[in-house]
Amino acid sequence: MPDSISRMTPLLPERADDLQDLSLEVIQRSASLGTRQHPVTLHTLHELLRIINSYYSNLIEGHNTHPYDIVRAMQQEYDAEPAKRNLQLESVAHITVQREMEHRLREDPALNIAGEEFLCSLHREFFALLPEEFRVMKHPETGRESRVVPGALRAEQVVVGRHEPPGHDSLPAFMARFGEAYAPGVHHGAAKLVAAAAAHHRLMWIHPFLDGNGRVARLFTEAYLHRIPVHGFGLWSVSRGLARRNADYKAALTWADAPRRNDLDGRGSLSDEGLAKFCRFFLEVCLDQVDYMGSLLQLDGLIERVRAYVQLRGTAMIPSPPDGGALRSEAARMLQEVLVRGEAPRGEVIEASGLKERTGRNLLAQLLAEGLLVSDSPKGEVRIGFPIHAAGWFFPELYPVLSR
Image 1 (spheres, rainbow, N blue to C red):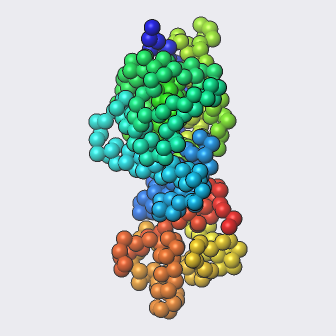
Image 2: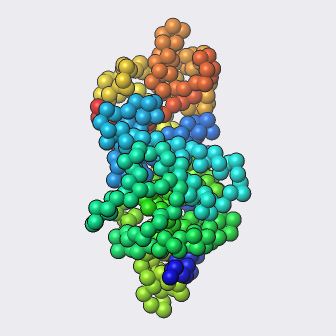
Image 3: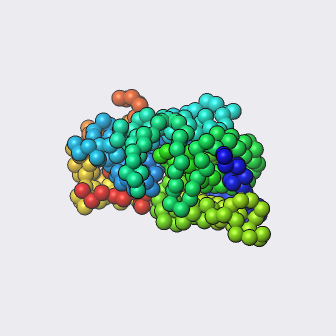
């Protein structure tokens, strides 16, 4: 007999006033991030954060592919070792799906991101890009292998730790209820962010796919925060916060898996207290990441870290990128000029350096070759770049900096 969808209740914490207050704080502080830098600079940072998001989402799955190796893969430079190459392909798949997802959200405002069709599309697009080895799941106890079909709901029963998700024959009903209950348009104001947190857990609880549920849940949550919208989102990463507290994240998911304990623990089948604890944990992670990026996006502080990076490169105290050499100290003035203005003509950037024309042009060419400055055309205006060899110095602790 199919499971009753009442097994998934409560769908939201029953007493959520404090959670809505916390949600409002996240929304307000996130919105302020957009005032910290020029919009052109923030757009470049958004591109970097997709790479960082992929890195941390992989890390939650136990796959450690450094952002340096992810960027190499994006440039079609893959590791000779098959296992490392496969992890690079996994990272590129995540970035590709996230970018296409964001485009779809912009193009289709009426799309229900909580609906089965959208969630299955995330799974289908992600797994379609993975190596064949990633589409086979081996049962940890029996050793039996099952094939993961991209975009298809699982067709067998599974057990996840101590949690037994709904039977596969019940999945269409659970997914339909999920799509109704968590459609962003159903909720209002700060309650939307509480719903995003609750939906993150409940999607993991349903476990609709044979594999890839955590990945899809995190992409879905990305979509939800864009759809609310949480202004400034894209300049901070939920996955970074969850990965840095991975043990707490998994414990919080387990709290919300628990059945109702007594009459004081809500009126649903699952623990209301457990769901509220998960939502509070999730929102606190969001707030922590907003505050982290907020501190790093202060213009004066970013300029100072860029100057320090140039100085360290000049003394060879930190490694140069491949085919790169020491940086002249005047590079700091060039980078500062572009940071303040967002983008600037090449001649004015050279003038800001104080160098003679030929020397300034050579230094500008070096900054462009290293990706510290970027341009859309050979003679066009330049803007700041955040290449992976330098971004970890500009934004400390955003990801582990390689010592090589």
